Length: 196
Ligand SMILES: N[C@@H](CCC(=O)N[C@@H](CS)C(=O)NCC(=O)O)C(=O)O
Image (cartoon, rainbow, N blue to C red; front, side, top):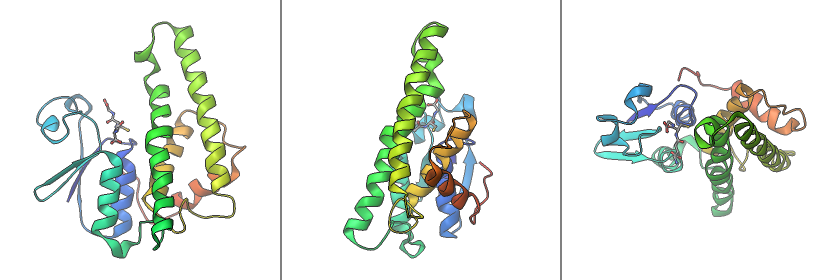
């Protein structure tokens, strides 16, 4: 199994998840200037990370890859619980992280490419930051009295950790979200190395 990623990008969630399984895997850091061209676009035509290959299987899209790792190694217990409801809850948070939180961070990362002029870019960034804080408030509420987003640790927790690293890079004030901060510390103190 081989994971393709970029340092600190959403692919770090897959890298952490693979380390949590304790199973062997390869990791390749894709060169930034190689993302949008062959041979990498033969693996992911969208020219984005993560991508995962496993024998003849080629997978893209973070949610699919994270779920694949959890399915492939059920003994690692990364589904967020054992019941259908518990697993759906973990998936619910995974979906929100991927399609709502991550996408809003993409506005912070890419405001300079989305609109012209510093004023418009700052307005866009401020709107995205406000929206992110609303989402962190929702996640903070979910984590009240809980260690993990699901009933048990899941791939969604690795994704949240990566997103919170981005919040740190943007120096977002998360002091209003103590459960979110505690979740970050819990994951950070865990059994993996951030080397991607
Ligand atoms: N929908 C995709 C989005 C992946 C994505 O946004 N990847 C970013 C890194 S977090 C990327 O590769 N950005 C580089 C680029 O698009 O140039 C997924 O969930 O896998």
